[in-house]
Amino acid sequence: MRRPRVLVVDDSAFARSVITRLLTASHRIDVVGKAPDGYAALERIAELDPDVVTLDLTMPELDGIGVLRALVGRSRPRVIVVSISGVDTELGAEALTLGAIDLVTKPTALASDRLQAIGDELIAKVLAAGLPAPSTLAHPATRVDSAPRPDLVMIGCSTGGPQALTRVIGALPADLPFPVAIALHIPAGYTESLAARLDRMAKARVIEAKSGLLLEPGLVVLARGGEHLRVHRRGSGLVVEVSPLPPRDFAPSVNELFLSGARAVGSGALGIVLTGMGDDGLEGCRAIASAGGALLTESAATCVVYGMPRVVYEADLGASSIPLDQIANEITRRG
Image 1 (tube, rainbow, N blue to C red):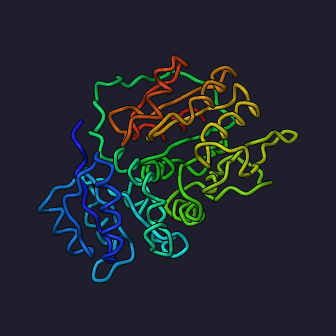
Image 2 (cartoon, rainbow, N blue to C red):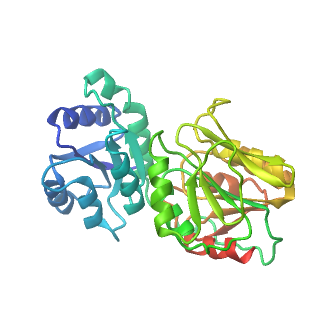
């Protein structure tokens, strides 16, 4: 497999050096250039045509948001934000909705040992971002002609998820007759801002999940970064639980959300798996299928990373596979 070619963009010379060293030391990634600000980044992108850009957000001259706006509509390079949580939180949420496919939290103290700690995460995300676009022939789109109205819609996603959610949630009507719960792999500190940004552009109401929240029809809740979102039956209604336990590879975990939804509403569950690497969600999708619920997966043709949807589709659980731009219509059709 061809090694991804990466441009490192950061206004700190020290951060550029450490990030370059981390990526190069993997022996699976080629760092082809560095840039200290947004204008230089755009020049290097035009010159080098990298597969992936690691992008700082707070920079002089032209910041990371300006770079992303200049890249809107382009399929490459894929951008991974390297951001300081708590400092760049609002910018991070905006970056994710503008097309950044993933986010890595940079430690506030730019000491070498602290930056070293993000190495494995950054390498994994760069490798995922550098994968070639999935073949449109990997799995032809399939569709269920009829389906009962769900009691709860649950969406899980990872790499490329924020932009996918922007397109899906933005296309839903305000009068959905069921609630929607979302588990997105994202670091702690960004989901409140991301939910607020989705809420401003959507017709439906979008909020960050909080324990005890009643899930009403038309409400979209986004799991809090770093914690699991579960749904429980309370009388005739559904309520939210937000908790860091039990431990999982990811928090929020798609499996935790889907497992709880399958227990709470049984055959009334609709699980949807969008773009992302890995297999989080497969266990939960098995539970939904066993309970008689329905499953949708994003097709290979539109995924940034065809990982999570692929393992579900290939597990013979009866999941339908449809392009991203049809998923909101499919959700609405089932209402």
